[in-house]
Image 1: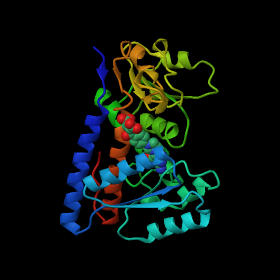
Image 2: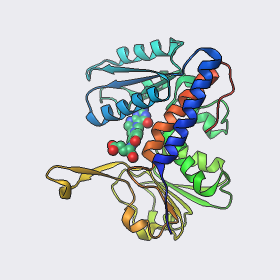
Image 3: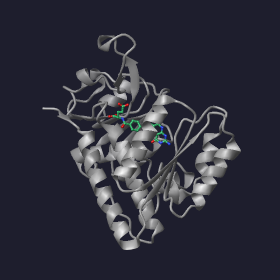
Image 4: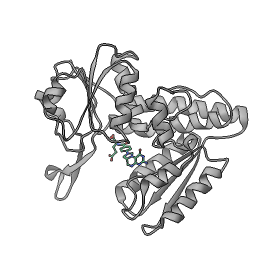
Length: 299
Ligand SMILES: Nc1nc(=O)c2c([nH]1)NC[C@@H]1CN(c3ccc(C(=O)N[C@@H](CCC(=O)O)C(=O)O)cc3)C=[N+]21
């Protein structure tokens, strides 16, 4: 029988550990972890994500602040806010919700966040630490960190001898995911839109991670029988059966046809998504421990 990986349950157990770690820090130092989330503009999906992040931060016992800036905010204003949060001793983590409106240079903003407060793990210092195997002082991007916990549920910490394919090569996900799999001894391939034969690469993968950004692109005949399939896609597609103008959330994997072939598979929703938010909380508590000179908990 195929295992359907329960991301909600895995996220709940991370949140439980984060909440306990936050309470222990407050007992020892009188300080709570502080998370600042910055959002620019009016995109409803972004606002929904940011609200759930702020809600979760409060649930974990953090100091949670949200800065909502107008769509027409200038680069200077946004960078000045980041500088202020960098200097604020009560803030351990700074997250700037992406994507930013088109007139803003998001890379300049991200790189201006202090690496030790970069709970998204997007600063070049954190990307570099991951690439060079420094897990002790860096912060790892939340979605790959969460996906990796799901992989560990199935395979444990040592992926020696297993072939992994990551489809997607973004700095936000594909590259850090490949680094994490490599650090766990998997034999890693990164596939992307210019790869010659993605289905053939996929059929060779014991661990198939899909982050292509195309609804249900991975089909049953891409999946090696018994493979672990991790679906990182979030696509809203029309759902006329739910009513006129309604949508549903689907992943990058055609779940219904792939599930019977896979050994384990993560669904959308309820797979990687909830883990992303849980790992943001984990990174914030890690940053707060380090800021207080304490050895950080591991997740
Ligand atoms: N600086 C930055 N960091 C991010 O980590 C970041 C971002 N910007 N911009 C947008 C994306 C998207 N993202 C998600 C988080 C949780 C779910 C999640 O919990 N999804 C639920 C379903 C939620 C629903 O129903 O809409 C699930 O998959 O079960 C999804 C997507 C974080 N992102």
